[in-house]
Amino acid sequence: MTGRPRRASYHGEAMDEQVETVLHADGPEGTARVAAALAPHLRAGDAVLLTGELAAGKTTFVSALVAALGSQAAVSSPTFSLAQFYATPGPRVLHVDTYRLDDLTEFRDLGLDEYLDEVIALVEWGDLVAGEFVDPLRMHLAADPDDAAARRITVRGSARWAPALDALAAPAPSSTTP
Image (cartoon, rainbow, N blue to C red; front, side, top):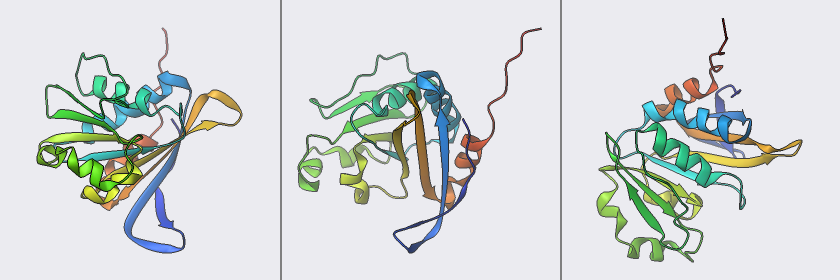
């Protein structure tokens, strides 16, 4: 993982204390390291909104994050079921995929809002429902044009997320064999 937090603005508009970092993840293992670094910063009521093209690694990231939160569950994309809960030693994880939803009304009709204060919500294709969450962390995953297995992960959030972004941007400890 590599990256450096910085202030972000969107389309020329200054956002209230937004921070951003761009990370490089070498394959699924690198994605799992990003997930493991984020996990200790998540608590009930948090939402992580994931975006990226098809096969960008959104479900791979969710699977690694659910494992880093302590679940033994096999994670799969809820594209057809739309939502799946996973038990962890801490708050449950709600994994939602909004790819097949046409609009916000369809998301609201799922009735998931009653759970949002007590779960960690991980939402694939999260832009559709971003307004339903208070202070979400946004993650955009994209294939590295020079390495099909690697991912560029752009992470954005309010200043409340700065400690998490600092942890994500910190160099991974190197493992050495004596």
